Image (cartoon, rainbow, N blue to C red; front, side):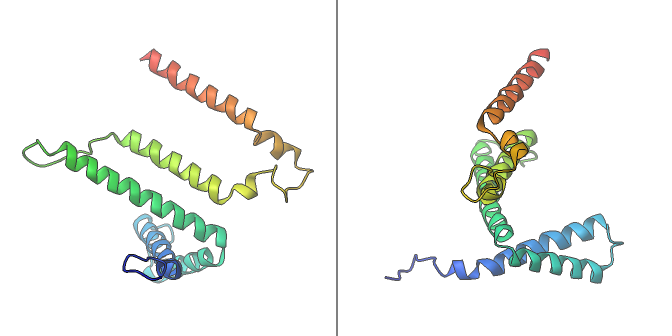
Length: 164
């Protein structure tokens, strides 16, 4: 039964939103960086082609859709934290309440989670359709290797903090 709060119509509009988001980001990056000489027509064509290619690939569209949801949630959380922390402050807010480094690490973690959930079957050599001849991939993506890399990363961060 359809209700007022039913948002199932948005699943049909998701490709349009993904197209507009990818187009706007690519066009903005190309205009700002002037990689292609800053010509608007060329930047428009390149961003149009990239956004259309994103729609053709199901994995790319799922990746952009999942990533955009997470980054919107992060942006809302940062805005809410800024409002809560500035409730007792008189004057203007000049900085974010949390460090830019923390926000960068959260963005990297979210990016890794979205990549692993979207492209997991591609990178997982243990899935049902994986090629058994990929011994190098099976070694690199083995859970024990990930555990050791994670422990080394934590040790590296702790040693770096103890030096300070």
